[in-house]
View 1 (spheres, rainbow, N blue to C red):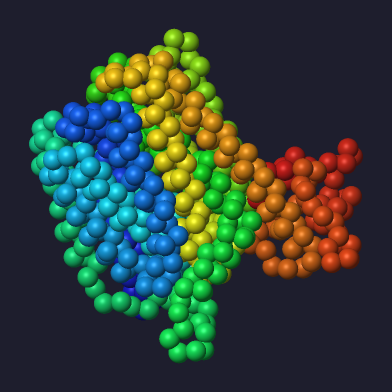
View 2 (cartoon, rainbow, N blue to C red; view 1 turned 30 degrees about the horizontal axis):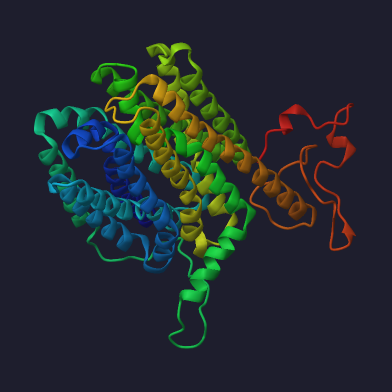
Length: 476
């Protein structure tokens, strides 16, 4: 009975934190359908509209490492409380400010609060549940984000013409302020929490050197670098499309009705919901397929952008757009691989710092993509409020280039991590997973002057052509 009570408490605490993340994604995605309304309200160019999301995501990305350090030090509950208060205040301000600079400041403040949410929830998962449940709970946390995205598409698009700008965003801000009450509870000791590394024995030792060492230690790990580039590549393209440029592209460039455009964005979100369940389950059952899935999804995202750019006439039909929405939707769930890498290869007291580090990747790429699209649109068609399909085709080349570069770096660090794992296995060290060596692996076969036998070197592991069986190729 006590064990069931503890389990119920763990689920309750996670659910409260996941609720904050739902609100965060709702606030983050609100401009996805409110972009045209924001242009009318503040008289914005495409570049100025892009600056809203660029600043918000830029602050989010810049706050990831500081937020991770603060969560490691003060705990996720306190940071979630601060986050929901900041986000609510930012949305209240965004509802009433009369000018573009003040609205820009409000969106930057929103990004600051948003930055503390996801890694706080993942820290709750690591502290309140055993390690084998981490992949599935990461997926379930992503589902709450998807639900927030759903609320920010069709319902918000319907509320804006009905309630108006000010009332809609006042209600959104009030939801976050009210939710903060749920987080006002006494702190309790988590069952899977471990104490951080001992600080200096000197009383009152300043934490700054230790913080710097933790960040540096996380970045030096090849698995953390791999996680950074996984998140950079898989998450950025779908985020750029869903948070800002998808709705103007569908309604303005392609001339689709608002209802059809909202439905396509909702399809993207619903598909993310489905893929979060399926991809998360696969990653939980077979950790060795994590990076291969991220690699394949990155190529799929590249193909999606290529379709939008190269379609004859620049006007893909709705059935093609449906396929593109479904394919892009896999990017978000696949980006969870980054957080699993951060968790598995870093010590527990550094998990939030490492998670913040890898989370920076996707949002940094999103900022670059949002900014470049806005600048290219204004360069190709200056002074035009509604951009054409031709302008968007040129602008989407920027996202294609960012994704391609991320895929290249992902591949480099994937091979590096495989090399380190193979050497560690050969030396008898403990590794998060066990893999086999393949011909594409870049492994130095001697270390510290001693020859070592690497997994996969045994001729019995190969077929008559000297190659590993096909079913062993897609691991790690």
